[in-house]
Length: 348
Image (cartoon, rainbow, N blue to C red; front, side, top):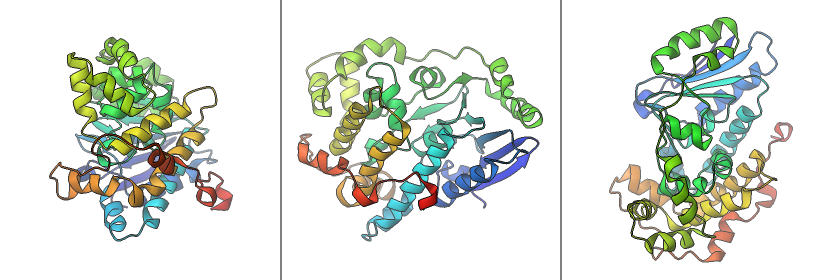
């Protein structure tokens, strides 16, 4: 497949995204290829670890390829999107639960679907130009691909802030928020990859790691915890609107670019997940409740139209007055019954 290069080099299973002209956006076929490779290598004694990286200078992976989701959804074909998301989420789950080390090299933009393949492995490496974010609310979705797990685990109310504002995290912030593990200057990556291929030993990662440049999030934690502690997205917006600080004005401006329905559901998902019963399966289940219904009931098609089809950046959101009825939120997040996401591959 021209969009992805899968091979075994030395003791490493290698997965390289080779679609730089599209910022390595994930297609359904790429998701299935990754899933298939990981399944083959699962019990292969010749593979000690897996390395995931990407070609091009700008992005590890800037998200899922949403053009086909839009094309099918606008024709009232919702099954394609439902199948895409289910297959992608199972692949994300496989990465998270994989018994062998998975090392990802997250250069440039790692957004949305890129987080799903790059931020669930055991060793997540960032460099100077890494920019990680969950911007799904801007196209009428919610942070998905298991991203809600990391948002719920992030310090304080950082999860609500990152999902509501789509703030991009540099290397230091990504490590602070729990989306990455190690900072290694990018000119050292080729030699490190070669060593991993030869030795099969991930110990070299810790030896190569350096202190990451500190980002702004840690210093903002107090304000984030104060203003993003509302019970609902509407509460958060009202608290920000009542304050005259630069932080509040900037945060509110970023939030109001996004779908009110998506914001309401994103905050609700994080709140329902946070606590001792949190698992990736639970996070993916909540996410799939939304995405299963996204093309038919959410702002997703309108968000994609405004962002990548017409590119007018003027989406006509539902609930433009920013007041989302509780019934609409409940409809998007209600259990799916027979359509519930299954992780039992024997039943697929």
